[in-house]
Amino acid sequence: MILYELDAINEQYFSPYCWRILMSLNHKDLYKGVKRIQVKFSDKSLISHKGFNTVPVLEDDDNWTGGSLKIAEYLEKTYPNQPSLFRGAENMNLTSIINQMLDTKIIGILARIIVGDVYKVLQPEDKIYFRETREKILNKTIEEVDLESSKYIPILQKELNPFRKVIRNNNFFTGSKPMYCDYILFGFFMWARNTSPKQLLEKNDVLWHWRERMLNLFDGFARKSNGFGIK
Ligand SMILES: N[C@@H](CCC(=O)N[C@@H](CS)C(=O)NCC(=O)O)C(=O)O
Image 1 (cartoon, rainbow, N blue to C red):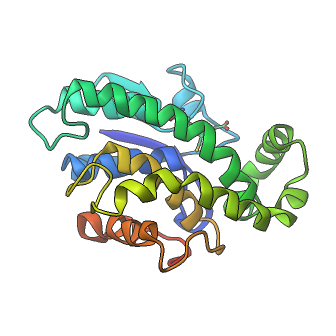
Image 2: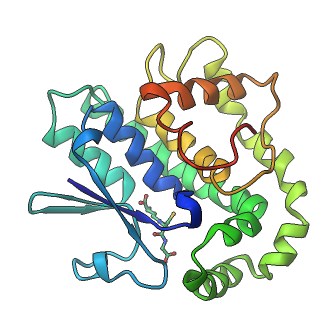
């Protein structure tokens, strides 16, 4: 199996969507058989010949799948005897709704907090493309967005409240074991961890402790990745 992911300097691989799949592959005990190949923002030829324009993309024998949720569903269907990411088709539908809601809510806020830091860990040849595309989306220069980043931390904090409510009495979002739902949100925290020194959560936050549990999963797989450690 090959996972195509984004490149970064110092192997600080940060794509939130790729992190969902890295965690899912570990969850399904398939990670050992995976080769990770880095794709550049400025050169996507490794995936574009199959019609893909974003990572993650998973190549499994002759099957190519793109889009994090589609990959998770593919893994679930193709490897039904490995630990389940969704526990049932109904949950898969519910998770898909949560996925869409979270992606639209969180990405815009978190991008405004960390985009300046992400820019610093890009490969030099990716910086022009990244600046052009991101400044168009954010309608400001990366430097202007970075100057206002602290304004968005409380906004992010507030958006996370629904998760705090469920995690208060559970180790993970649906109970005692992590599920794909946990990996959706966790991917965003890995995006921040591996690019930015900014602190997003306080130590007395239930989500801080959830994130610690997530970092510890699979023998500390995520914690061992190159990034900025605690925040
Ligand atoms: N909905 C897609 C989003 C994937 C996505 O946007 N990936 C980013 C990296 S985090 C990407 O490849 N961007 C390429 C680009 O901006 O040209 C998914 O869930 O996989």
